[in-house]
Length: 256
Image 1 (cartoon, rainbow, N blue to C red):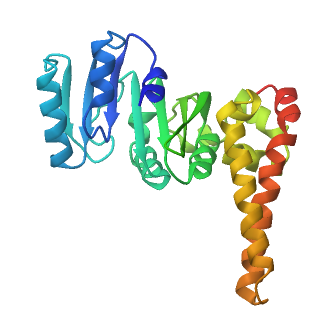
Image 2 (tube, rainbow, N blue to C red):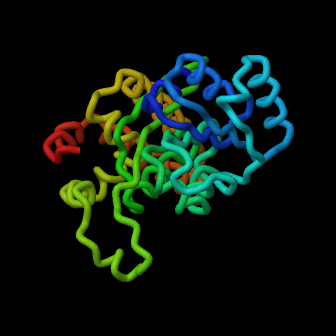
């Protein structure tokens, strides 16, 4: 929670989608890092708990609550920062897609997918979002990557004109990387790799050991179509893991 909160830029209004207990907006308002917040959740139960915590902290004047499916109850330009954390990648993609108009008007999005993170990064890369910062923490043996991004393309009502628009600087940067490097960056994070994040390094070592052990177990089993397919999957993941060490120079050269 502290790592996610630290990514929020000072001085704005935060919309916390899927707020649950509203811990992050409460902490940020108490520290006077943000002017106020909108705590949002799709379920009444978590929203009621959030309201209790907000009242207990005597922050009703600074934090309002809204029952909302994703960003549905949020207006364009109403929040400077949008926080979407503590949920699966597929759900985050749903929120980004359904709330595209609102999310693209915010100055920044703070995202912390707990699964399918490569799909989230791929979506961001393909929809004109730029990753400004990434971090990764380990708590109780679990690894949590997170990122701050912003939308960088001009909104245009004419879809055809937007498709023909000049590619952004980030697009050109990605075009200088090969497909394998891009895939590995989507999996592990371009800025985590570029910066040599120490938590990511530990994750890569642990993952390599786990994948190697799985591969050895599979290779010792009686051959079948299912085993052959599974071996190929693990070998591909091992290759991606090992590539994460070798692409650092390519990422620095590309200037991501």
